[in-house]
Length: 84
Image 1 (cartoon, rainbow, N blue to C red):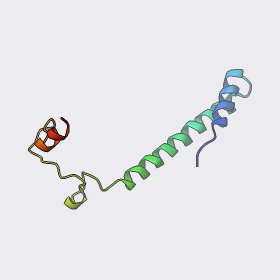
Image 2 (image 1 turned 135 degrees about the horizontal axis):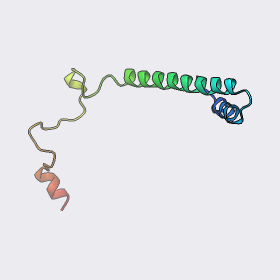
Image 3 (image 1 turned 180 degrees about the vertical axis):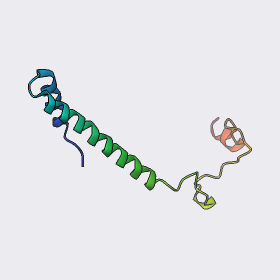
Image 4 (image 1 turned 90 degrees about the vertical axis):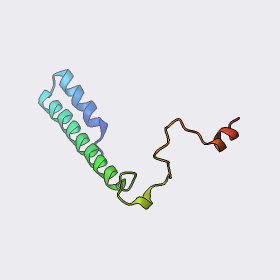
């Protein structure tokens, strides 16, 4: 669950005003901690959903049929003719 940015705003206000500073420090620390947890959950979900790509051991999962011997600047004659 995403943490409301209002906890950060209220916490910073309380810290800067000097009124209830410990509560403000708690709000700011809590906001950063929960945001960090949300980002870690998002990262782990991203890597789990994208596990089958070019690093996969299954050779049929590759979408391209690149010639491994060709340089990056190589253009086929057909492509050169199309681009004239």
